[in-house]
View 1 (cartoon, rainbow, N blue to C red):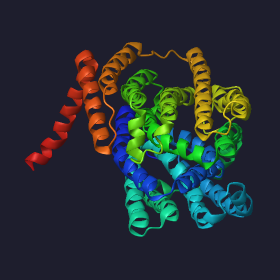
View 2: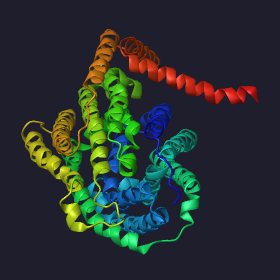
View 3: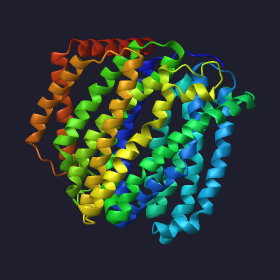
View 4: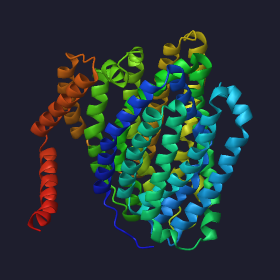
Length: 498
């Protein structure tokens, strides 16, 4: 395989810019969905988003090891990984279809069998997209950003065609997702076409299957921890699920900041430049902190933006909790990238089982169990004795307890990394980001937009205030902007003279 130099921050900025660009398409998609479906149908869509991950949980193990092999320039890793993951995809899809008679009545999906069948395509495509993106992450991570654009724009276009134009409602939403995934798969396949023409190395698959035991161990823990969200339905019905699904659509935008560090793991695997971590934290916090503060300041306005009828405004406390959770999870993700990048136990295209079991990788694989041990008994007690089956109270307890779990696992992760390598935390930069965000929040606090247009205007003003203040108090930010403008000018100059 031709080994390409990974430009960590260039790739991160490309992917983050793509995610921010797709915020507009994502919002448009969310608006179409929220205003075309009844609250019950919206809740059913949320249920599918809870169910599907249980069938795609095996999409990650092979992809995880494939990325590590690709990042180190191992020949034929891409083709081998894709074939192995598609074999798993076929099995998972058949299991999903076979469980239709059980899953459908258990979650009240009897009237949505066509949607259930359509979603089988999402199971199949998820495996393929996961492994293709992992291959690109290890070698050409910026193309994941381009793929995000292709997928999101396609999803919006097909959603408009199927839901608004054809009035297919919930089946149309499901179909638009499936077709958009297919377009994204086509794009990734074209980018990786040269590697996909190579041979399959079955020895890699043997090593990956051996190593996947640890991934499966982690995935089982993650799915156990995810029982927390099944409690939304059990204690709060589809109404609680709709509150969570609606608020998470907004809070997830904060987590886009993690893409600024997307190439950190392969960079550390191939070059061991620990200084990249500090720069990555600066970039991630530069955007994650103000976005979280903005959501905390105007949670109700953003929920009105989602649906102007205001039926989700009561879930403003949930959105505030999820904003904090997103900030914690974003920081934790960066440190998880570091942990995965500094471990060398598999660098000779071999995965020694005993050595992995004693390595820091095993700590990362075990964190979901720590999270589950904290959240599940706590949630069971709180929902049984305090929530009183009130959908809003149920989702507040679930999201709050989940945030506490994420905070605890982050401190465990930080402790393990701190003992292994010296990471310089940019506390000074964090202070400046918080200061600029606080000034922005003070101005936003006195506005209470109740329309989509005014919410957009206020959000834009808040972003400008933050940028102006940060540029005024931080020299490095000014240098970053100046450098970016110079690069842009250099790219435009040849075209202008042509």
